[in-house]
Image 1 (tube, helix red, strand yellow):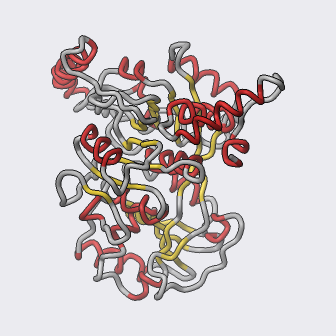
Image 2 (cartoon, one colour; image 1 turned 120 degrees about the vertical axis):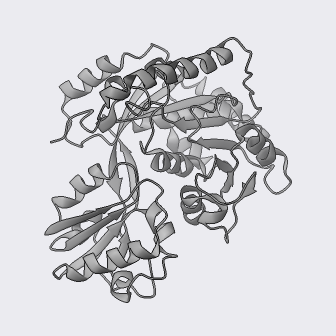
Length: 398
């Protein structure tokens, strides 16, 4: 079993440069603390989800969790910078948007959730202003900021910091020696800290050790999540062979020789989850947000052709948005290429507590007069029934 922080590698010889980098970041943060660089608050619920490390910590599945929690009751807007897109400025996604217009993760989000607003803008203040004022989006009720923990020009109502279990920030160092974007004390800005990608078999003692090691303040709440999966989805629906999908998504991998094809920052947990299910696993790992090229298609075709049957290819949803435009993939690859959707699951029965915190914040700060009235009505009813409290179900039923 892997242990916390096991994927951290420190380049000791670069520590002097990390010290210089830390001075620069420290000065910037101090300018915000002194009010010389100003933060802007908005009259709409704004929830930021981000990290203080380079690389993936599970931002997209956690944003998607929030979307699912809220979308049936309020109008949700997701704002990202649109990493590696070819467009500039503010772009509002529509059904025809592609990764070149808005980036791979926003593209994935828009494809999955047709009824939410997805926009990209490097200038988050401008992006929020456009979402809340443009005629086509000014009915938005809540904005989720993707990867905005360091974007301090926006003052979110709830600041969520994600910490990868396998890259715990308490063991890491600043760039370039390590992968921290800012000093460890940056975590103090978080209202909620979530340790992500936890092994599902963590023991109670390990949770207590992690809680103590993170050393959070009383105003901060700590949660733990692990990776779970939804059923496999064919990337090329027309060419796809049919595999037996069960209620247990990973059961479909049983007896298969699997090529795990990824272009994400941390594929290790996914590999660990899959290898116990399949006959064998072959790994083809590319860099995060990797732009697949013709030569990569040739390599994928070659590796898969040499694998014994029965065989299939598993990839992530984010990678699927880039692979689907790779014309050089062979028909055999297209017929056997499946995306394995990732979702997050709260541990220690913390889901209801987390949901309640988010829902309560959105209700309290909503511009939507109907939501505010419902909140007041519920509070009035609860005053006659002190044993009752608002939960996820009552919010959705409203």
